[in-house]
Length: 202
Image (tube, rainbow, N blue to C red; front, side, top):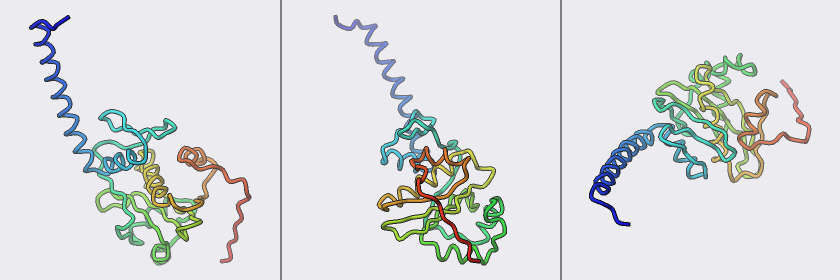
């Protein structure tokens, strides 16, 4: 059965509406692509994740969501210089490193082969580092997100960036509290069966 003239008219109007919606969606995508979230979305698409709708909700392969609001201008960087004064306020929020001095932090940064910063403008709002031979073993340490930014996907984005950087390494380790186990399990980590040994010579 063929289209009547009225049907074609309705069809054209419908197609015009689709074109308008598509144009608005593409403009939104271009805007997002220039932001931290956009780069994170593109990186995760490349890694096999999917983006749902223009709200940029992100779903990993197990169906867990993460992400941040569109108006955030965050930047993840392995190369941007981090100073001890930048990191000191974050460490003071932790239970394991509140007494570290600027000099100690500077020495730690100098001797850590991989450091990752999450920035909002000039403000460091997230940090993590890795001790590694870059072949067989890697230990992710000192993961911290500024308290006002917690629960907004910054920590997840940092860990995913680290795992992408370390994807060629045979084994990746990290230590965490019992309450954080589920968070890291969602990112692919498993509880180690072997005992965790520690020595504090200082």
